[in-house]
Image 1 (cartoon, rainbow, N blue to C red):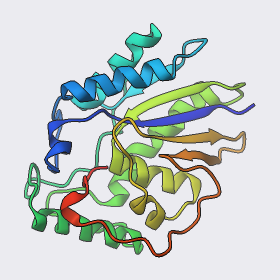
Image 2: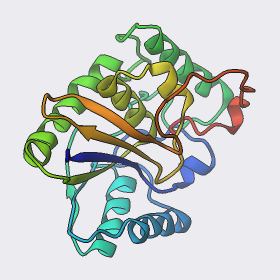
Image 3: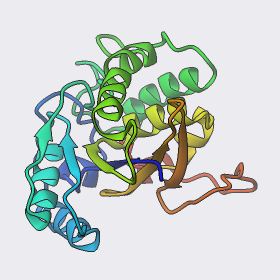
Image 4: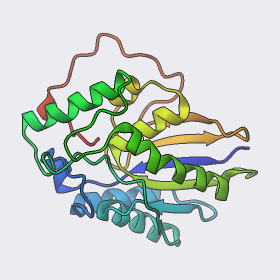
Length: 227
């Protein structure tokens, strides 16, 4: 049996509730509800044996991982490089329609293949890949190569998780952008000995992952931009 990497979106923050572009570190803390989400996640996934548990350096991810770990009786380790996409100072903390549209336009360019597009002072998709993918390689080498069913949990962030999982599995970025994640939602990836990744779970979806058709577009103000 191959090992698995489970990417977990952090619990709810106030920024999520008010649809604020909260990307700079250390970022917002969990709400009381977000803390309960993290505990519930841990209780629902209580394991027979300890799993490796990691988080990004962002406060909300560390808090989520610590609460999950408390239910499993293990400590979470922090890893650098797996924080959220940085939108840059001009949009940081904004939650208005124009800010969401500007960030969405950059994402659209990434979907269309322009991986160097960026907001002023923000990151390109190439930047994101360069910092995040080596961490995945290191975790796979440490825990999954030659393993028999090992499970590694990494608490990270919705937008960047979707971009990285698309890259690892070959699913389109259009799929990744469309299929957003709720707080403590997961993307579960199976590691193969040849270094490839297969997506087993994406949010509430399981394979085969089919293109969406005839889906009514959700109003922008109702979308969590980091989900």
